[in-house]
Length: 139
Image (cartoon, rainbow, N blue to C red):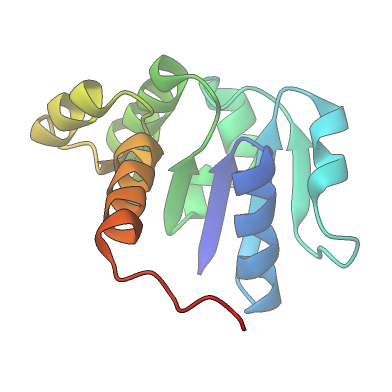
């Protein structure tokens, strides 16, 4: 599978490394070259400096042949815009988008943007952990 990831933060770099290890073709795009330091030393994919909302940068990243596009920057608006470009202009079959704001995530999902909110996911995990039986303390 050919994957283009926008955003080489902690999550983007980790995902790129995991997909690369599994043999997928990975290109990761970030506006800050320094961000690529987060990639694993053995990363065999491509790291490109560029803006994921710019069509030329996306073409250089291989968006036209991509099976998937994942928007993982810190900005909800940038992620949604890039996801829409990947989906509607380049017809990427699978587009995922991180949206921090749970209300926006619901709105964008209703508009056909496959998105997820780490805020909602983490809150649910904490709630489940809190409600679970505490593990017996080590004696």
